[in-house]
Structures are given as C-alpha cells and as structure tokens.
Image (cartoon, helix red, strand yellow):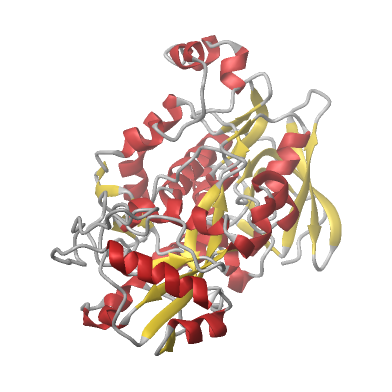
Amino acid sequence: MAHEENQRFDVVVVGCGVAGLSAAVAAAEAGAKVAVLERSTYDERGGNTRYTTAAIRMKSEEAVSDDFLDVFASNSGYHVQPDFIAATVLDHANRPPQVRAASFTDPDLISFFADEAPSAIAWLKAHGVKFGGIGFYGLTPRASPRIAISGGGLHLIEVMTAHAEKIGVQFFYETTAQRLLQSAKGDICGLSVTARAGGRRTIDCGAVILACGGFQGNAEMVVRYIGAKGRYLRPVALGGYYDKGEGIDMALRIGAAPAGDFAEYHAEPIDPRSGATEPLVMAYPYGILLNQQGRRFTDEAPGPIDASYETTTRAIAEQKQGIAFCILDDKINAIENWRRCVRTDQPPETASDVQTLARKLGFDGTAAEQTIAEYNRACRAGTFNPFALDGLATEGLTPDKSNYAVPLDNPPFHAYPVISSNTFTFGGLKVNTDCQVLNADGDAMPGLFAAGETVGIYYGKYPGATSVLRGAVFGRRAGERAGLVKKSG
C-alpha cells in the first residue's frame, strides 16, 4: 500500500501474527492512530500464527490448566541467585536494578499471564474468533488439557485483520522495520523501515510495539545462539522464515535487556521430505529411533507424547546431520487410527528387510539390524496398549524404552526420516507486566513495547500450547498501554 512519506502515528506495531494483531486492535480501541508493518505479502501475512493449530493450555475458556504456574516456574531460568528470587516479592520499582534486568522470568509476568488468559479468550471471542476442537497430539491422553481455536491460527489472522482494518488500522505489507529511532531524551520516536516497492523511509510515532517473532528464520542468528546443530534446523512452517530477528536485534542495539533462553528453541519432530505445514512424525513411540550409525540414542516413549516430544526432538538434533529414522514393523497397521500420529504428506518408506530401508534412507543397515535384535531381546511379555502409557518396558537395554516395548519382528518394515524443526526461538527481550521493554538497568524504555515471540519468557523446556495464548494476552496488554501514548500531529 502506498502512503505519504513521514506519515505520523500514535503506535506502530511491527508484525502481524496473534501478538501484533492483538496489539494493533487494542491500541486502536484505546483511541490511537495505529500502523502495522508486515514484511510478508498480504496473502502470506500472519507469521507462525497463520500456520498453527492454535492449541491453548487451558482446561476451559475460563481457566488455565492446573499445572500452568508450576510448569512455568520450573522453566523460568537457570541457577538464579536465591536473593534475586526473594526480591521478586517487592514491587518491580523497588527491586534492585540487577534483579529487574536479570535474565530470568519474572513471577509477576507469569501470574499476570495466568490471570489474564480467560479475559483474552473472551476478548478474542468478542471480536469473532471461534473456539472448538483440541488440535493434534497422537493417540494417548494429554499430560495437560487443551482448548483450541476452530480453524486454527489462519482463522484468527483473518478475523483480527478484518476487524483491525474496520476500525482504521493501516497496514504496510512487504515492509520491514530496520532501526528504532530515538529522541534527544532517548524516547522512541519512530522507525527506519525498508519497503520492497519504495526503498528506505522513516515513520514517526509515539510508541513502537515489537511483535515480529523470534529469529528462527535467520540462519546466522540461529547458529550464533543455538550452536552448530542450528545449521540442521528449519522452521516448522513457512511463516517462520519471515522471523529474521530484527525486532530483537534493534532493541538490544539501543540497550534493551535480553531474556529467555537464547540457546534453545521449541522443537517438533518433522519429516524432512515434506514441504507441508508442520509435517509432524509422532509415531516413533510405537517403534524405535535410529541415528545414521544405526543406533538408538533415546527413550522413545518416556511419557505422554505432548510432554516428551520436545526432549526427544532435541536429542534428534544432536545426532549426525541432525537426523534420525523412525523404524516400525507391520504391527503398526493393527493400531486403529495410528496415522493420527503423523501429519506428513509423505508415506513411510517400506521394505521387507531393514537393509533395504537403510539403503533407501541412508543409515547403517548392518548396525541397525544388530540394534533391532538387541532391542527385541530386551522386550518382555506384557499387555501392549497404544492408547495409554502401558508400562511395557525393555529390560537391560541402554537407553531403556519405558512404554510400548514390543519386538520389531513382523515385516514389512516401515521408516520415516525425522529432523528437528525450529518452531520458534526462546531468546528475546525482557518486559514488565505492561509489556514495556526494559533496559540493562531494568528500567522501562519510554515508548518501546514488545509481545509474542519477540519477548523472552521461556527457558529450558517449552510449556506446551502457551505460545498463541501469550501472543493474545501480552499483545493485547501492549496495545492497551501503548495506546495511551498520543503524539501524532
């Protein structure tokens, strides 16, 4: 869309996923003149949100899961000083600056998240977003409850974009934010941007909300922060390729405090042969996982799939060339609806013997036959139940398999290659409960807000089904607070 140069807005939102759209709508409803910058085309808008099934960790539309606070508390930082944790009982302004800026998740932020989640759901519903269904997670019961958006993230993007346009939000597509502009006092006063059709320009504003994702689409940042295994990772869906990390980088360059686990990411197991959205392979608990050397390297079924797949997938990323192979025998076809455990659009490779599979897929067939023989000998009698954690475990095997340990002895054999996707990165910016970005002294940076993946809130293990919800909760909050800044001409 073409607009006059140096047009002025109260609020500029960078990004058009759930966080950005929630922020834009909330700011406009607060009376602000709002612009949204989105690097994609109109048809591809929405970032990761566009492609997600949009599962949400709530037991109902009125309450988060019972384990919500506990799972965040156990994944909120590493070896944090006890006195820092004790200081969080103080109001934010009264905490020592080291505590305000330290890279761990503020308990106030998580309490706010849990408290505001039902209100955010009701707010989305009031704008036309429909809820229903429970998303995808294989055959076994979930470790924690879920609700979901009917029609997934695409439905949310379409509904909230239409509403934002209706209330006057202006969208600039194929436009990328490059640099934050500051006044002589240091307040945020605009952005330098690049538009595909119009080159570089500046946009003046009273506040900026960074809601432009993580850095999973930036190969250099991924390897820089996550390490050498990052070269084998790929975004789980096309939207992730737009997440280049500029929002995080431009804020860090002007003194923002980092937060979140920059060395980790949300991992999901996908089929590298597929170009489909989120081509998940979650049938491996009913077989075994082999690396290129034909060896097992992890417990394939340590617990509920929705609570364990990330750990398993990260182990896959550590293997040679970041790949593993899910080996099944033909007993898999006796399990009713087992294909609910896969979303890839590619069929498994099938052969009468493991050596043939190995030649097709590129792993050591001789070692694989030995591994399968060792595994088969370690299986014990018991009742196999694919619809619950059956406790049917191996004996005397390293690593153990804790459930579904039945011999692989009924050809033909089937195999899926599996790699780790980088669904989104954990490292980002530190914010307070008003979604103001904090500087290295823990003070709010005037005029700068952030929400969604651009905020660092996760450490260690991802609390499943919380990403879309955090985008809605914190995006809405950022928009409400940024909307109070009125400096347009």
